[in-house]
Length: 137
Image (cartoon, rainbow, N blue to C red):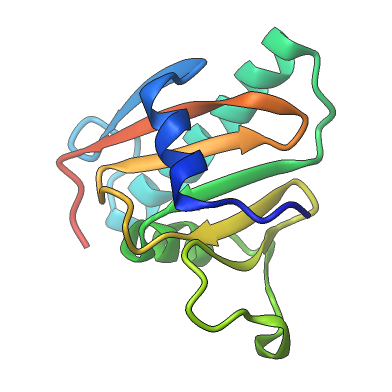
């Protein structure tokens, strides 16, 4: 696993390879939980678009988001595996907090705009940007 810096994430936001808008109001689902599960499927869709464009492996992806958006992704998935607290780096921002399955490393970035979820791949210097609109906690 490679440690990301906040500057790296900001560079990805400036020049995304894919841009996806996700709107809470128009998302599929009747309940808040179903709508946030749709957000998780959107993250997987963004990775799939990068797979197709860059011919990438299915593993080696990372996700960066601010703490509240990241907590949505953590709770929507039964595949969330937290990083042991003994391996946390105090004061690191972004901080590696765990994995979704074997596919995504999760980074919580407190300095990131709450409207963005950034999905990237370690082998490709580009990322998909998911812009969150009208979402609530």
